[in-house]
Structures are given as C-alpha cells and as structure tokens.
Image (tube, rainbow, N blue to C red; front, side, top):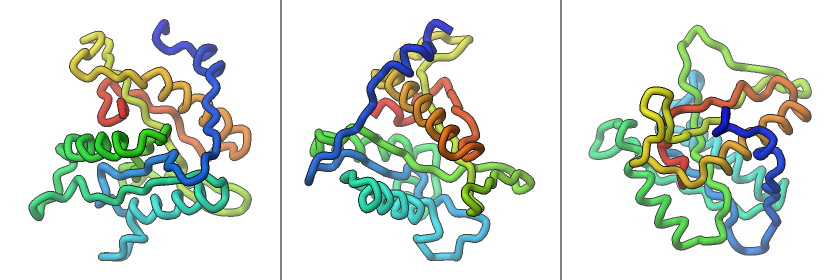
Length: 192
C-alpha cells in the first residue's frame, strides 16, 4: 500500500506537449509475431505491428504527436519464435533509439492480450465492436522477495501514475473499454 500511492499518482502532471519535428512517443513490439484469431497469414496489417501502425496514425494525424514506430522483429530469431528472449533483444535496440532520440517521453510496448480461446474480451464503444485494453506495469517487487534490485525500474512510479490516469480517463470517455491495470513483479522493458 505504501508503494502504490494513488493520490500521488493522480497529482502528477503527465501532459505531453506537442513539439514539431521531434519524436515524442515510441511504439515497439517485443512480440511482433502476435496475431489475432482472424489474422491472415503473411499480412502484417493483421498482426500487432498493424495495430501499431494504426495507433501511430491516430496519435500523429488525429492528435498531432510525433511517433517513432519501431517494427523491428525481436521474437523471431534464427528462424525460431522465442518470446522469452524478446525482451532482452528489444531492450538493446530501444535503449539505442532512446539515446538517439532524447525527445521521446513515452514508450509503448504494444501487445495482443493472450487469453484462452474461450475468453472473449470484446466491448462496444459508440456502436463499434472492439477489443478491450489492459494496461501492464512491472514494479520490480514481489511480496515474497521484496525489491528485485537487479531489475531496478526508475520509471515505476511514473508508469503507475500514467496507467492510473489513463485508466480513469478511459473509463470517463469510454466506459468498459479498459480491462484493468495489471501489476507484475518483473519489469520486462518497462524501465525504459
């Protein structure tokens, strides 16, 4: 309870000013090979990368942000699908992208939510059927181990604040679109 302070998270000003010409938001996919039940074989637009293209277009053309969409494949190496090492591969390249583009303030690792075939996470917003969205946070802490020091996440509180504020705004404008804020002990690449 002392680590997750909702009042503090709600008080943070997370406004992202629009700046001409410089990338502000990075979208990447540690699991670029994720597809959907109706994805067509070999059609990138039907994968999570296609969703990233769509989100890039929305953020750029509707909201006026500058987005860097990294479509590098991190989970398919040497002809094999390996999602467990994808975070390590992604971390190296994302760190380079951030070093080369210090104007980036928001990093999104966009995933498809993997659930059993019997689970349907669909809602309707303004008459349009769509997938529900879940926000994910890695806090480098577990009840049994305490702080996981080798996975330090200096951005943990900002990430939690952003998730909470996004969740509340989402519920205000699009009730039912957001599933929950999922909190995991490990950080994955959320320290970036």
